[in-house]
Image (cartoon, rainbow, N blue to C red; front, top):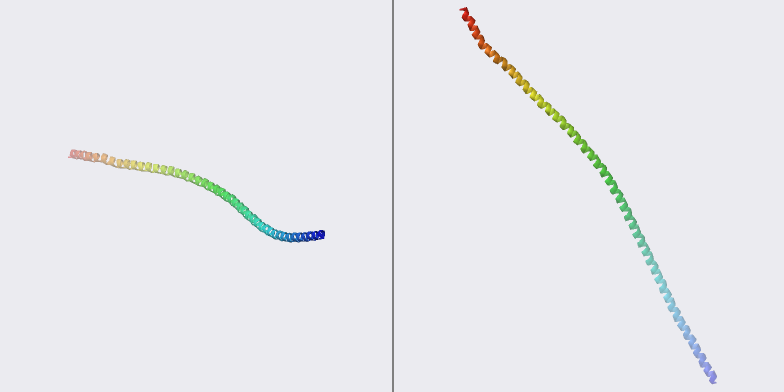
Length: 161
């Protein structure tokens, strides 16, 4: 009987241990389920965060690409402007050169005209002087002849008397 009692006690103990083990397993599985749910939630949150990160990286790359494209476009624009300015400068330089050349020609022409005018004025003055001398010379020569003529006329008249 003692053996039966001890066996019964052992069976009861074993049953209690099994029951406790089952409860512990249930509790553990509940905890594991909760942990699994939390893990799934964390995994979903991580996926969302990863997607946001990928989107942000994509936007950043797009912004970088746009910036690079804008820099290239600006560089091309600046190069075109520089070429246009160089061409304009070249044209302006050629125009200035042509203007200087035409001014030089005009200056030479005006100098020639001025020299010709001065020469013409000098010639006119010389001609005027010569003409006035020519007019004055006959008067001067005529005046002495006129004075001499009365003497000569007076003399013949005197002779005639």
